[in-house]
Image (cartoon, rainbow, N blue to C red):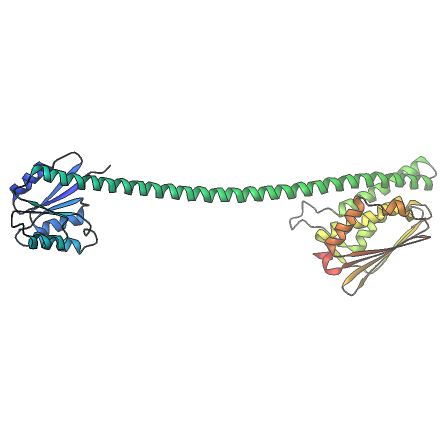
Length: 372
């Protein structure tokens, strides 16, 4: 802990030496001044626990020095004990207290009285030092706690963000896994259907292999069309048109001997996430047609008409030549969930009409959503 300073003010050197001898102790610094002006200079440079001031001095008297100390913010709270050899009358003391004194000591000085009073102010100052040190330590701890609380809040915010991000990633992963599983199952179903159709239309093994190979290659091209090109230096998004996408998706189900699928009408540009979404939906419709509808029969026919009506894309899907199996296509499965999700994302709608000869379907999507 820092030392404690007392200020001794007396115009006589011998009086100062006497006070120093009486007050000397460990951790106490005694500052001496032989005039009021010298005392003021020391007070501006040092923190003082107690000032012992002689009342009668040439120049500034002890009372005048005390009044100046009380008028300065830095020194106004320093305890003052007047040391006097003069009269101890009430009026004299009252003026001293009015000037700011806390006590008087009469000359000749009683050693025990001086030391006892000085010890009180020494301990009081030490206590103030301890309180100030504790206050500073508490402030440092408060700052540290505020910083710890700030870091905790940042950590919790980051953790919450990470957990939310992880949950979303898990949800996306689950949807992706279900979609992959669904696509693989559809791929096997489509492949089995292609083998059956190719076998019915082929007269020998070589013709079967060539026909099946071309169909599978067309199926692969349809898959590639829905994927962004990672080598693209731009935003990596694919772009095409609605008609081009439909032709690629239905190409695996064409017969080499003659077309049984007709795609007609106007066209509309297609890009970004809308391309993938619409490709998933059209692939689902094509797969259902190959599994249960017109494309499951060699005599089946599929007609697709694309048009722009106002602000909407209108796709007319007509299947003929196959008896529908409503129970197979109407049950709730991942394909149904996928269809609902795609339509919700694109802001579209589907109307179905089952008849004795097949399926009539109308798909409507806002044109603005196709290039979003």
